Image (tube, rainbow, N blue to C red; front, side):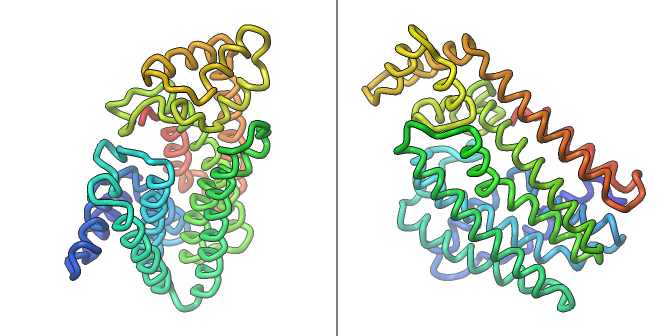
Length: 324
C-alpha cells in the first residue's frame, strides 16, 4: 500500500504533465496559474488511495483523479467570483488577478477538460464512472444554488445547511473515493461504502472550514479570516447563533448583521465574541466529530484488510485536526 505522501507525489507529477501552454494565452494562463497554487489535492489523492485498496497499480485511476481535481478547481474559479473572494491559497484569485470574464471562460474550459480526463477511465468502467461524475457535477451546482438562496433568507435551518454542504462539498469527495474504487475493481458494496465514508468526511471537512474561517490562522488558512462573518454567510455557526441568541445577544447579533458599513476588524471581533458567548463553536465541533465517527464506521465496513485502510483512516484524522 502506498502512503498518502507517495500518492500525493504521483498526483503532483501528473498535474505537472498537463499541458496548458496553448493559445490564446489569456484563456489558458489562468488555468495553469490556479493549478500551480497547489492546495491539498485531497480529491485526486482519495481517488488513487481508494483504487490502491484493490490493486498495487493505480494507473487506471490517474486520469479520472486528475479530472476531479481540474473540475474542483473550476468550481473554485466561479465560486470566488460569486463570493467576491480576493484570495485563494494565499494568492490573488483569478478574477482579481485577471477579471471576471477571464475567470468564467477559463473555468468553462476547465470543466470541459475535466470531462476529457474522466473519459480516459478504463473502458470497462467508463459509463459507471462518467455517470457518477455527471450526477456529482449537477449536485455541486445544486449546492451552490442553495448557498446563493440562503444569502436572501433569514430562516435557514441547520439541516438545510448540512444538505447544502453535502451537495456543494461532500459529494465530490464521495465521488473521488467511489471512482477510485470502481477503477480498482471493487465490488458495488465496497464502492458505495467508500462513497458514504467520503460523504461524512466531506461534511466534517466543511464544518472544519466554517470553524477555521472564524478561529483559524490567516497565514496557514490561505485566505482572509472572518470572510464568512463579513458577508453574513449562513454557516453552521451563524445559524445556531441566530437560534440561540436572546435579548441583548440577539440585539447585538442583529445589529452586526444589519448590513450597515462597519470596520471589518470590529465586526469580526464582535460577532466572534457573540459566538463565544453562545457556545456555537462547540456545537460545530460536536457535529463535526459526529460525521467523522460515521465516516470511520463506514470505512470499517469496507471489505479489505484493516492494514490497507490505515492510510485512509490516518488522512481522515489529519483532516479533522488541520489548521489550513
